[in-house]
Length: 315
Image 1 (cartoon, one colour):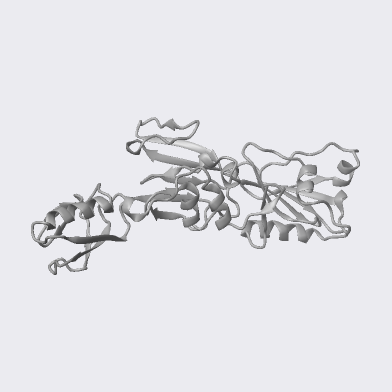
Image 2 (cartoon, helix red, strand yellow):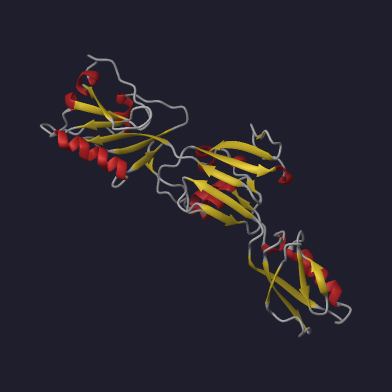
């Protein structure tokens, strides 16, 4: 069944995708690194003010009484224990609390067909779906697969078909989004690691515009091709005032340039008097209204190029 992609991953979908995954860990399990900003509270130690402290490039922080402390590579819980041990030289029962106010040491890049592409910071353990949600969700024209690139120092990606790149520095894997989003493949909702690059390609589209019941762009699955009749089925058929015998396909020639018009008698195809016609990615199938003017065709092409008012449908 087709459905319009809203672009944002709903909370219910995210919850269902977490089936079979470990729940996100609290802040105490977050591994600290250079650039993270901390606030440290210590009762009975007035020298340690509750001021932001940033971990330097070498992974250290400097505090009164305890001096220079290695924080990078430790969890919040481990750093708390280390500071507590050091303060025992001055305080009988130190009460230390460490909180992270800025996460900057574990970036993840999310690029491609998402609503807010850019860099997302990991805050504890996050899954693929959670990171996509932080990037605003999928764009309407998102494809059906996602590619993940990971530094080998963080391990190989635990997905079937994962491979190392030619340099031997990265693990690369592709995964289909639909089974993950529909909770048919919860194992695919893998944990994301620092410096991962998540790339969501844009889908190839076929447009059906004009006198059809549901006009717009229809996203093609990977390696999928459809015909005129299949495209009409996706558009839920013709309107009563349509002129299918005067239909046109607008096709982009190789190398770009102005689209060419290809006449197609959809009426004859529907009646079995003519063979079905295969469509190519980015084709526009235009079904005119009876006695429509040729100018309408160009207006449709302009609307597609501008990208306004065109609904993208996914299956």
